[in-house]
Length: 486
Ligand code: DCP
Ligand code: MG
Image (cartoon, rainbow, N blue to C red; front, side, top):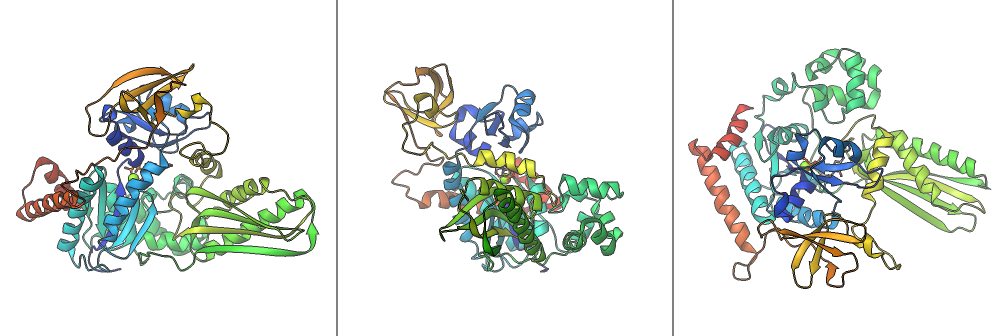
């Protein structure tokens, strides 16, 4: 661990929902839920307004609708979120070559490696400036944590939410972490939390008191050691831009082709378990599960499935591999089978004992492409997905508020307009077409690309001066208090 808070963790606030609110003026300040709207749909995220009703990520959509019947329900637009993510990641890469993205809206940055910060003050300035830059370039807010290691930087950004910044002074880590609930530690999800609670352990201090041997007995070797180190705020993991190990995989070639489908299934299951063992031995987890099948005629197929977050749960990997196997024809026999995991991370972001069923529910929604693809003409009523952009030949740009019974309701507004009006059309109205999302921050040709950045620079400079001077606008004062409070 270093002795300056130069590891930065950024996490955008209610990312998908905030992007939708920025894109649709009528939804600003309102409860917005983004997720799968099908019968097995789950919530991807909820705006902070919707969270006050108890709606949260991974909740079944039906439950969300009961809690917040008046919220706006939208399907995700991954392409749109990805383009915003690209803008954010570019701003991070301007700070350091060591940027480690964890998902579309979250990344670690080693400010010291980039020469951007070397002590508390320079790190704080970089964090303030980054938040202003993100705001200027994307129009959205993100929260920043600064600390001497990755684990605490992430805890700090969580505390800063929404729209804040928290810096954890080196030396205060253990005192800060000690009274926190065990769930604060990365990798401790509901199942591990229960496990520990049954043993009378509810705080991080109690984990430390239990001692390493006891933890290893409780949760196994790899996780026990990791848990103990984390409870002592020991975290030496470097920020890594590119991982050297790209994947962990195992495979077996069979002397005699396997014909029996049940036996193929059992082999895949065994390989999945072996692969997870290898993964865990290296202290890794991964997001993408890969199945390799070489058939009797030497034709080799690979199939892969990407989960929402990294896992090292044997149940999750087994189930994903089994699903992938379902899509492969093995009549005629197989000579080789392999299971691999790529998209690696240091450890699971969610739960050490992540629940397979939950992951699967998320996955079914995430796999839906932004727009239906394929050769088949799309039936008119399926073209209008709630939340997606459209263009009307006369009325201009809008988005689908809902559709059904041969009708589609469109709200005509753009990121820069006032909240717009609603009009209803027939689903096959020739004047209506699917459209691309509009940029959230428009740059006029005279201003050029640098205008937003310049504005950000000014804002950041001012905020920094105010911090040093100890005064500020109510907003800044609040976030500065949070900085000082820790
Ligand atoms: N996401 C998802 N399914 C989940 C969790 C998240 O599809 N179970 C998606 C939607 C989120 C995005 O990933 O907007 C980022 O995830 P975060 O955990 O960072 O959550 P948010 O950014 O939505 O909210 P927060 O302000 O708590 O970070
Ligand atoms: Mg987020």
